[in-house]
Image 1 (cartoon, rainbow, N blue to C red):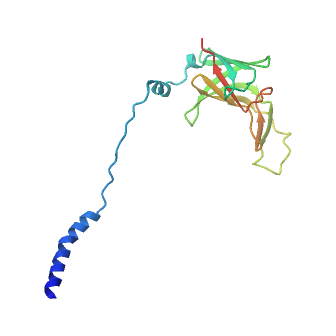
Image 2: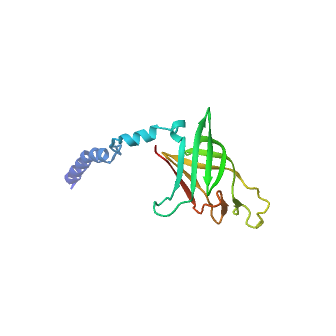
Image 3: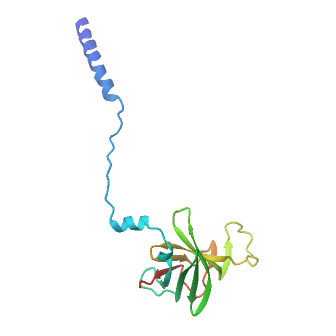
Length: 181
């Protein structure tokens, strides 16, 4: 029995370093996959909107391409270091200054300055007991997101924050597409 114990002890001492090495944590192998981007994708990522890119005439088109959109056109012109706009909606024209701004979300926004919103009841989540929104002033200035040759404006809010920016346009989002010459 003493001899068996000695052999088991010797085998255990031989196997112990193997178990120790096998149980050590090793860094996981990482595999990098590099995909080649298409030329159009790279161009759109690298290209930021410049004056020549945003100037032109934009026409309202439906988001789904099937329903009717509101009767709106926007013309953007470059003037020195700034821009101007002329918006036509249902035969009513509005003119003013426009400016570009990069958002924290890296998107480019166009601001149509001087346009008073049609309706605004404010954010009711701030004071649900209030109920009276008659004292709220209408905000001034409308912004939209520029993506390629399109400008998208959120025209209406919801029950928690009710507003309408452009009266005469019943769309939640106004999609303006630049006319290609």
